[in-house]
Length: 228
Length: 228
DNA sequence: CGGTTTTCCGTACAGTGCACGGAAAGAAGG
DNA sequence: CCTTCTTTCCGTGCACTGTACGGAAAACCG
Image (tube, rainbow over all chains, first blue to last red; front, side, top):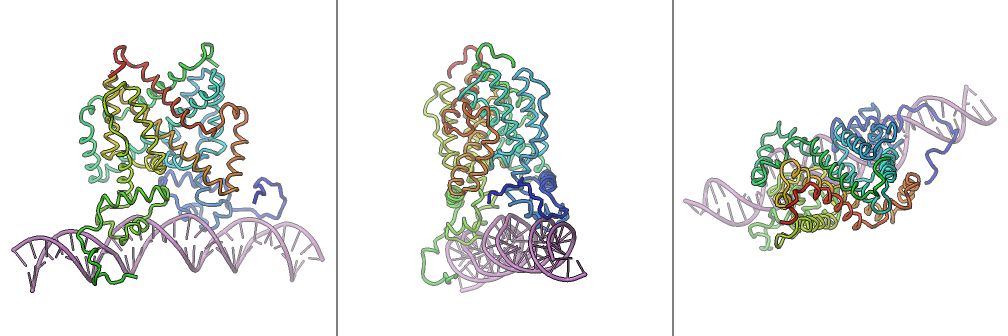
């Protein structure tokens, strides 16, 4: 039961072909290649040239693999070099989060289902708390600010990924394309010019939305807390 | 098992036993009861007392069912009675969106994977464009504002649902509870007091984050545009 | 009545996650 | 050397999935 994995035990062990790390690495690669629904334990094992059930020696379930893979990708974000202005710091971190979710488009689908409890994700959120605490936020406002920022990024990239997944597949599938276009034409009449649903400037819109939230945060800061 | 239908039982001979609407209704009920992964075509057919393949007369695929069910729940949101202040209107609409996702916790998981193209969802987004246009926003700022608001709600409720799904299951499963708690204790040391990860005041935090975004939007409005 | 079309659905197939139990490769003790 | 024990590996099997196919019954049309 609770006998920890880290328990130091010079028991008899032989060199293992597989490992937790190798499985996670392969899982990320497979998810990148096949998408969130493309990961099966059989395919994962095949990629590692192992029998399917061998994986279960290192991993409890498929859910476990997904949890691990999800946390793994957040390792790709840089640690902050030196403390700078809170606003620049947050923009940098959140832009990097977004980039991670672009490299690994399956991430939003997984975060919508499971909590971000892994060490890497937690480290990230700790940085946010730290930055905004230093900027002068406390209490429920601090919590709300951090929650708003990460919710925004998750939600934004999720819909963004859907959109160009849709573009990708509808290039190949004329039927779907027609259907989607029909919906869009039908439903976005009056605001179509100035507010096209998918006008492509995702980067600019992301930063505008982010700026909007950061302005809201800034207005709640004590006068002194403009830099860290 | 298939007690030959052809004798007696003339109730079954009536023209349409199934319909798209009946299927969608049953799908929503099944998703509510079993969660996003609990919907299978067999279970859905059973709930309708029909053969599995009968569904495919009215529906193209399981994906189709999910698209339909997803759009269906957005019908639950009230149409606005009369035009009021844009801020109150948005708060009301977004609070209702959140309530929908609470009643149907599977919604965020689905929106993370598929676009909100259905008529009900589109009508909702059209209202947002309208309200903010009337308030004075135009161009990319309008698009960014609408995107920010819906991304925030989706993202917020997604993580919120995960959290009390986790609470629900860990009450029954002591192992998971221990694991989760361990992670939380281990990773939230310094900010644990003032910014507990799950301190339960979800309503307040949602509204604070929303207010924060609305402040950001308000700061981008032309001076005149305070009400519609 | 016959023919056509519409609704229903049983069967079958390829795929899934994973429980179970066994094989085999070493290490330790004799 | 042999035996025993631990640890890795994995083949088989089971319950379940989405859905292609084709057939049967019933309703409609002439």
